[in-house]
Image (tube, rainbow, N blue to C red; front, side):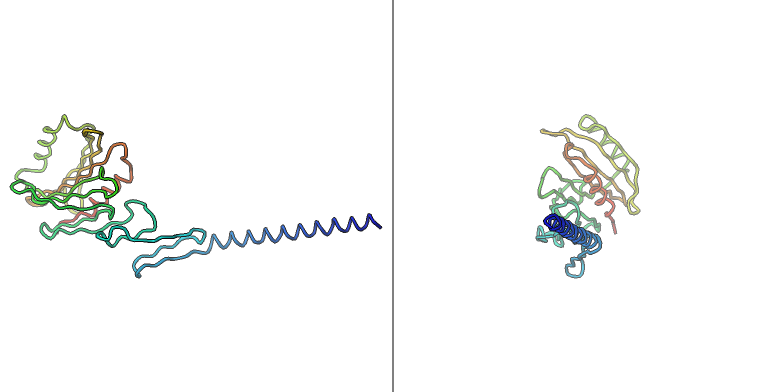
Length: 226
């Protein structure tokens, strides 16, 4: 009699454990199916929409740099948002990363008709500019003279003939040595009529990456002269 009671007890215990295990497996299966199929969407002012899996939690959506609006982001991934700039004086437009700050400067009496700096707000070692030049000579002659004058200042020069939005010109990539470190320099020279347009970007060589290269070309590809 005692043997039968022990046997039934063990059997009931095994059945109970099996049932609990089955429920746990079912719960895990349901959670997996839910996470893989259910998504949430965030909409901001009916103009920005972001869809993401339910397993991800997004917090602290905010706007950075009120003077560069619109710029709303959910993280600090750089170069994800671009802002349009238009020069009324010279009739050109381009887009630049919202994390950059613009500053216009003038050079009276020089061949530089228009100059605007851009610089990374969070690391000032990343900077560049957009210029408009009066062109009394051909672009090829200007670049050849510039190359000869600065031959001892830069190395690893790569040049390429390009066309951007109907503007012909050249792309330069080279390295220079500053006081403290080496810089990778990306420059584009484009012509229209009696003017040429120079877009330059300077990056510390140790920080140079495909992201920086792609960001530069996004600026260049957005450049248009009306």
